[in-house]
Length: 203
View (cartoon, rainbow, N blue to C red):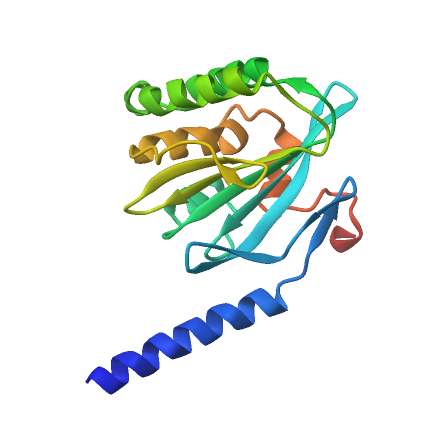
């Protein structure tokens, strides 16, 4: 029995490593998103990546990583295991203002009870952006969710907060981009791996 469990664990790790090798990177606005990466010891695959526009201006790129591909917002939220959203700035922006926009996006897309449970994490995120002051072009931040640990916000690859325990916080945060009132509908489609109607793959 023990040998079977060991063999299963080794096979699982090998399959995860193979999926990382086979996953193809994607380039968005000159920013490279690896096809696979890890959160903790769990391999993730790039579900999709795209650009956040404000009017005609490119503000940032975003990439969504999951344990397996998902083509709808509901499937993304239901996918088990760790998740990561990784954002790279394309222009300088006031970090405090970005934090306020994120909070508004969470409030617009989350049910009242879900948002109320995410308030402690939202306040931590707001404090973090307030201290940061600004995010310059090329700077990045990631938001990682790990079951049993919580949500960790990383700025330029470095953890900047203690884990935020409430799962509702990460769910509400993802809905900024994947909710019924997304920050950018084209970015929502890109994160879900949906190609534009006029893209070569859909002709």
